Length: 231
Image (tube, rainbow, N blue to C red; front, side, top):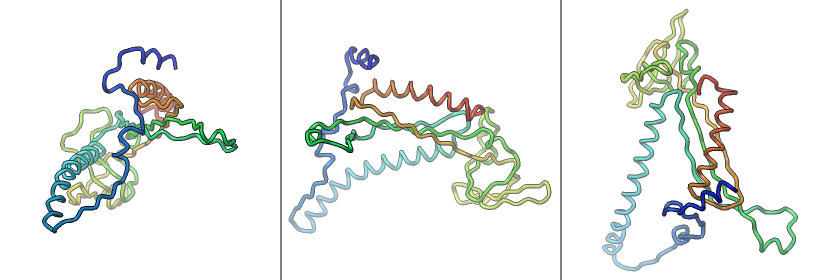
């Protein structure tokens, strides 16, 4: 609370305004609009709506492609962190008296999802690969300069004849490749989900900074305990 009061003493910018879930309620309600006219009127109206939708759809698709490219080309010793504030929720008391119905307390929830590739699995040059496993073909060992000839693929078949291990994989274009196991880096991803809970109902950058600082300290301790090679 002291951190918040100190931060709040600074003049906020436009991006520091408190978030209120009651603002912009028209954007959160589904409204049924009825119009009458000819088929031409309908098509004219639909065209205007589609112009807005195409821009939105292009943005969503671009974000999806970017995220997919990152997930397929990321390397160990780096992590992906996705955060978002959820809607404020009410805290209900199981044994409420009548007056408590008119004095509802709320909480703020910020979720964080952290994921990273595990070094030990990535650096293996031999061993079983299951169908459906994601791999990087011609991938360098963790910490080495990235091999620009490497590419993402999915395991379709693993076979072993004595000491020889071969794997058939399918790349992003659907092309099949049969390669020695030693050329494949297994992409084993570990994911951590963290929830930050508060009763102050604040959605601002000061809250986000506080949650982030607390979270990173915990994540560092967690990884030093369970994933020393990945930090």
